[in-house]
Length: 508
Image (cartoon, rainbow, N blue to C red; front, side, top):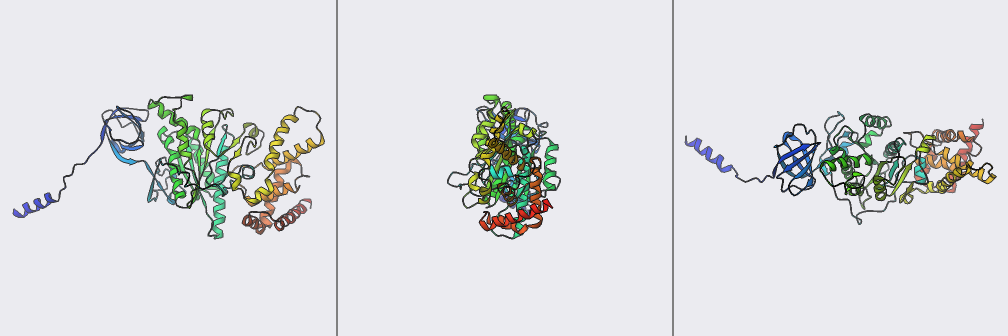
């Protein structure tokens, strides 16, 4: 008996009777994915809140008498009177190379049926953007593989370049082409064994899109062999607004891990118009005061705190952002487009008229601009395409006036002819990015007049023929262009000789 008593006493001695402080509250109302809670006095803004049944919420409204929480997950099981607890944690998502090739939801959970994700690190979804002193100026190019963009509206690593246009003008296609091109460059660079080569990893964030469109995008990336370098963050239209609101921030956190660890990443937000709509929906349910177009007053901060996280950091890596905005009838003066234009470092504007004319990508040269990209452009591209943007803008203006005149002088006709050839030269099918060295060769051929005697309708086919010829017979020359990144007299002579050889095959 004494032995039993001794055991009990020893067990009691080991017990630690510490008081645990818990901040709990009670659900007063739940509707449309939002729960209103009474009693959470110590909750933080954006803190994770634990609901019964394992559901998670985020505290977004901190009012005097109640807390408004957005529920991430199924709200059907929650009811009035349920007890809620604070966690003391901010929402975090898994990060690292283990996410490459995977499709995850807004919380970083896998949704592709490929099993669990191996991630040892977590990054907060909301994070303060790097300060001015930590940033480095944009000076390294990020090639999209689209000739019209790389030659006239170049993008640098760490830049925020907006893709804007009406529905169905090819905004997503440009973004996907860029991701595919990064994968192609990565494969060539890694195969070369160059120790200085830095691959670019991509994050594609799908916000409010149809599931079928997301599946189509994933299939296109997989077919091009780009999925192994890409993370897909999906918050489709079927998801609740909370997930659509969180998805771009989760994508930014995944991209930040690469940047903080000395790597380069590219993030595509497709698209931020739907993101703003999801946020508006949440804000209206939370009974926040609405402003212009029913958006809440902090909608500018919504996107600025997201896009400012893209940067090139001193001594570390970079995160390049390509946000997409959908306009209505080409109206760039609407609330959300003007907001995002002011935050970004330039925009690629896609015109419906050009798209309908068969000019694809339908890039409007006059309205598109890259505020920092020219500093990141390689010398070879500057040498061959320095005057292209001016010539094309001049042509568009002249073509608009020419339709009113019956008789045109020889100079005007020559200018219109030259401009038409440039337009045809820049036509490019979807999901077929062109390497920067082949772009240099294609535009150089135009500079030296190799398209002048070609029928305008055959310019696109001729440029394809030149590229195929160089790939098949002059691979070493292409490697030299890529390595030097500039055209000296020796290199120019070699390209001219190769172009002459190509021309002889055409006449034969």
